[in-house]
Amino acid sequence: MTKPADVSTKRLIGLAPDNWVKWVTQIPDITVGEILNSEFQWISRESDVLIRVESQQHGEFLLLNELQLRYNPKMPRRMRAYAGLAEEKYDLPTYPVLINILKAGNAQIPTAYVSNIAGLYVRQDYRVINLWEVDVNIVFDQPLPSLLPFVPILKGGENESIIREALQILRTDEQLNQLETVLAFFATFVLESSLIQEIMRWDMAVLRESPWYQEILREGEARGEARGEARGEARGEVRGIQTGLETSLEIKFGNSGLELMPIIYEVTDLQRLKAIQQAIKTVNSIDEFRQLL
Image 1 (cartoon, rainbow, N blue to C red):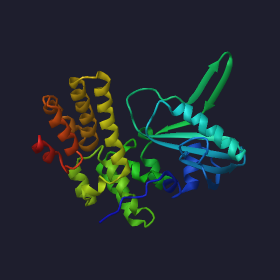
Image 2: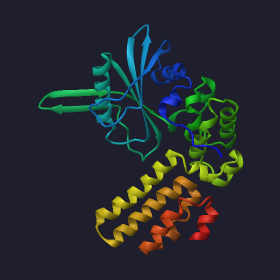
Image 3: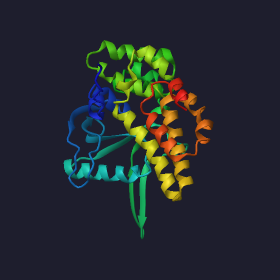
Image 4: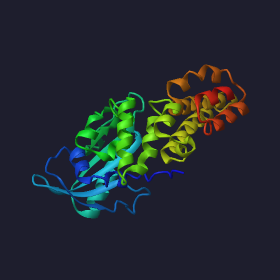
């Protein structure tokens, strides 16, 4: 049985660190020194990947890579904190980069943290890379093996033949083949589950072990529960679970899943909705879920 892949950002970037740092900074002569310890004792979280780099024009500095499944409005403040802590710990200037994987609404994503208290200004700029805006061809042309698992959600990457090409590269490279789990997960956003199983010969039970999959399902459930709690009544909780199911169905089955929402909106029994919420975690196909309804 295929094991869930190690999908840490450090592992992904470590596949081709020189190509990665050139891509995220757009500095042609930049070179990698070492990947540093990015754990800071003053905060409860570890920044994703901190790399000591050097270029002829800019000298030695730190490249801070922060990878987010979806953009969080708290990120500008966090980027300011991570950059400051990194500079304090290693006594080097920092180039922060925020990489967002999945699009969350149409809100504009800021590229700086700005604060003004009684005329005292604080500003932290950082580069933002939204993967859905990145041309999929760059992965194969540069090449950027670190982005191979994200091919399905890159611009132009939803094509079945391109996903097959990415899969072939992963499978023929011993260093990359465990990343099939990640590729399969992101393929669920653009292809039917049945087609993913055909292409990858995948048991969807393995895919459900992916930490990405678990995180995004929890996100859908939490969103629904939060809306229900905010309304403070049974009807609000029902609506909240329905909203969470909508998110989960879109994630797992794409537009085909959303076509089932009219049926789900007719279900007002709270216990039945909770049973459906649990069932969506285990069904393997849209037809199986439709029969359950």
